[in-house]
Length: 506
Ligand code: C2O
Ligand code: CU
Image 1: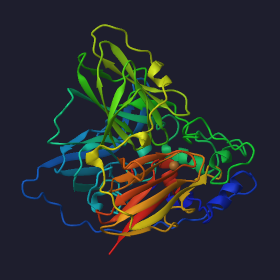
Image 2 (image 1 turned 90 degrees about the vertical axis):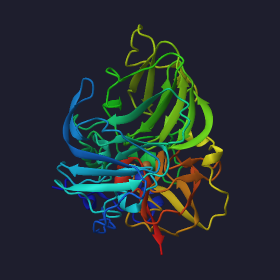
Image 3 (image 1 turned 60 degrees about the vertical axis):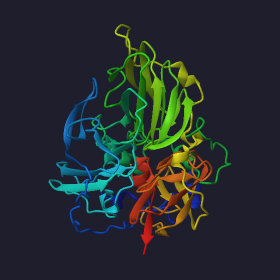
Image 4 (image 1 turned 30 degrees about the vertical axis):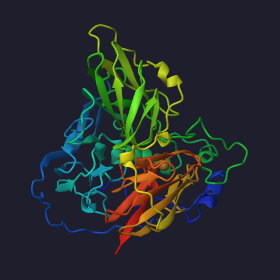
């Protein structure tokens, strides 16, 4: 029943990323397949979480099951929440108790992870780390308080299920927010392959068996060039286009906004002069998007839920797992909102209409805003209210992102998840994680259960995009006891082993 076992897929990096990377350039040397040890633990269901006095409860029942979805032309068989793509929006106020009862009708085990929420560890949805996987036919109740307002999303944390249709927005409102906008537009970006002749599991199998994502044989000696972990310098070792170089492993036939291809876009109506709040969520598995709204400059206001200094941008890069909020005062007319996959062909589009007449933009519309240098999230500055208090780090830990395309293998600190040593922390510490990307690919790094600050600017985020070879120290306050995953949010990299546990000790 369980389609693929991690054990058969993982290639150990053999504890030496640089050796593996060197081997990547030679077709004759292959890192041997080794079974990775997974830190699988088993769990009892704890006591039911009940609301505290006066706490509002938001309840929701969700069913994960196979569904046939019309993407606006292409019809695909996939897995989805409540047969919808994206799945149903869950919305609550900060401080509410959210209780979601998930029924699993998939032909596989699953879990739900509430991405970005600083919730209780038991509700985090990581099988083997915070709960048992939910078996086919079972139901499981998640109950947690969401402390911070912002734009979030939810998705499974089993295998590469995120690259099916299993994702949906989660919005936490601030009850005291002045509401300086008239309308809201939630934009969920995705790269789509499921039901087009390949499932995500087949894509992963193709990659781990040395083929390209569509199953074609990859050119010997070429794919290895993308992953020269920290070695560099050899002839032919080139970074791709700026700023991310080689940004993805998977070729996708479609790119979607709110479950629709660009030729059948979702429509947002507003009146000229209204202030519209955009909530942009990258739910893609392997694609960095560059977004722009034709005819408008966006004012970026939030990054991963937390307020930033308002910053003007004509175009913005959004990594997998990142969310940005922006406000625009909308003009009179019909405007494309486009999401261009970095380094890949095609685009996703949605349409903003404030005028009754006027032709819809073509699916290939390229707003001139895209010609501007797009803003990188790491260039934003935090709002004062989002800053962490200055404090010296009690503990510093290295987090080196390592691995390569050929043989396909990704890890942290030179080893796959379960073979690398957890970062051991205690409650009440300021912990500095020295993120260093030792590969020639971009990686969006995500930390569960905490929001970190970039060591330089103090920008608060839970997912940050590292360019090839970039070093980016981040700091967290250990205020949420538990065992937490940190990982690359390229879901194929994560599943290949690019994950690391952050473990509180007593
Ligand atoms: Cu969306 Cu473990 O992450
Ligand atoms: Cu990655």
